[in-house]
Amino acid sequence: MDNGVFLVRFKTQKDKEELLNSGYYLFDNKPVIVKPWTPEAELVKGSVDIVPVWVKLYGIPLKFWGDCLPKIAGLGGNYVKRDDATKDRVRLGFARVMVELEFDKQLKEQVYFLDETGKRVTVNVDYEWRPVSCTLCDGVGHESAV
Image (tube, rainbow, N blue to C red; front, top):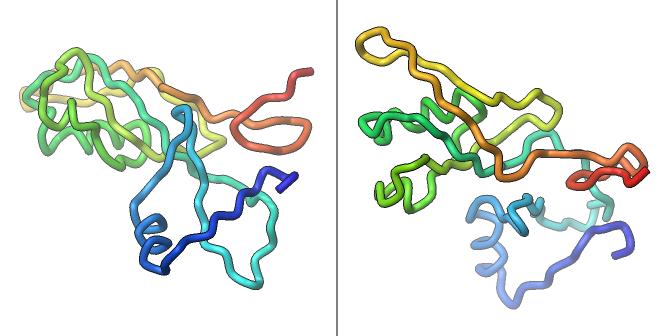
């Protein structure tokens, strides 16, 4: 549609349910908001308060890549999942996780926690995409070119 809304028709109800229940979708590392249609739905872009973003976390000691990783990632946003290379520990230079971020909050460049000895551990955060909005159209995912 002209307003940036796309309608998708499914062959079966099962296909629709699978899509709606399988989590977040990204295109060019930017979130695609997927919502079910109802006859009462207005076909306009809705407001976005929370967006999923892949982040790279640098400086996490390997011993914290297990059950602690969601807690560490949660210091910068709500933890969603980790990528396969992080889960399998095949790429050790950084941990890559998806977190939910509040759209209008300041993004943290570093997060901190104390290890089991009380030593402060600093983790650097690199965002693969930063949520932006357009001041001209109030759209999400792009900035005005003024």
